[in-house]
Length: 402
Image (tube, rainbow, N blue to C red; front, side, top):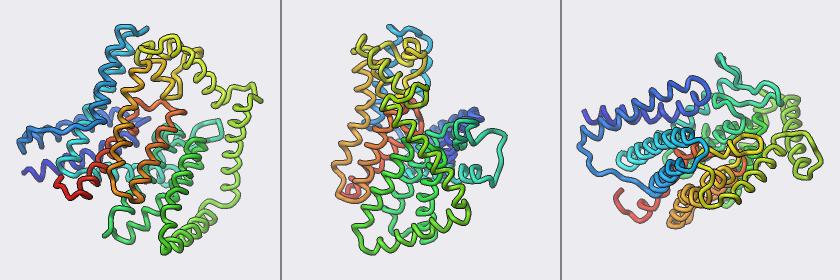
C-alpha cells in the first residue's frame, strides 16, 4: 500500500510542476487544487510510513527567515495588509519547498521536477507551433507580437526555456545508460528552446540563453568525439529551421531582435526620450536606489515599494525591489540562499555539471537585474532542485549512503 501512496505523491509532484507553468497565467485555480492534492499525498505517505524525522536545508532555512522578516516589516509598512498578504503567499511557497525537498531527499523524486519542466515545454511547443489552440493569447498583442506561451510573459517564457536547457543538459551529463532516442530528443529540446527564446524577443533571455548554450558547447569541445556530434546537430537544426520555419520568417524574427537591442543601446546612451522597457527600468532602478538610501536598514515594508515609487510600480529589478522594500537585512536574508548553494557547489568534484550549475546560478543572479523573483515559484523550486542535486552528487562522490 505504501508503494501506491508513494506513486500518488510522485505523480502529484509532476502535475504540480506542470501546473505552475501551464496554468501560471490562465486557470490558476487548477494549480491551487493540485497543490492541495500534493499536500494531502505528502501527509498520507508520511503517516503511512510513520516518518517522524524531516529534513531541511539552507535554502529553506534562509527563505523562512526572509519571510519572517518580511512579515515583521508590517510594523513599519505603508500598507500593512499588502505586506501580510504577500508574506502569507510566500509562506505557502515555503511549505511547498519543504514538501519538495523531503520528497527529493527521502524518496529520490528529483526527476519529478525534470519531467514537469520537460512536459510543460512540450505543451508550450505544441501551442506556439499551432498544433493545438487554446482560448487565450499565447502571443503578446502589439509590441512586436512576442511569444509568451502559457506563462503570459515573454520574459518568463524565455526563463522557462533556459530552465529546460538546464534539465536537458543535466540528464545528458549524468545518465550513462540513457536511451539513444531520448538522448537525441534532449539535444533537440536545447535547440528548440533557443529558437523559442528568439521568438520571445526577450533581451535577457537571448543574452543568457545563448551564453549558457555556448558555455556548454565549450565544455563538450573538451572531448574530441563530441565535435562531430555538435557539427551534425547544428546542420540538422539549420535544415529544420530552413524547412519548417523558412528563411524569410527567420530573418523577420532576427530583425525584431535587432530592433529590441537597438532600443536598449539607445536608452543606455540616453538618445531616446520615449519610454521603452529599458528607459522605464532605468527610471525605476534610479528611483528605487534613492528610496533605499532614505531607509537603508529596514526599507518601506515587503511589497510596499510600489507605494513610494515614482511611477507607482514595482521595481522590475529584484535587488532594487528588496533593498527598497526590506533594506539591507531583508536583501541579505534572501540572497543568503544563493550564497549557501554556490558554496555547496565547491564540494562537488570537477565535472561539466559542476561548472555548468555554477554558471547557471550566476546567470539567474544576473537575470534578477531585470525581474522580481523573490516570490517566483519557478525560481525557488529550481533553486531547491539544484541544491538537492548538488547534495546528492557530493554524497555519491564520497560514497555516503543518502
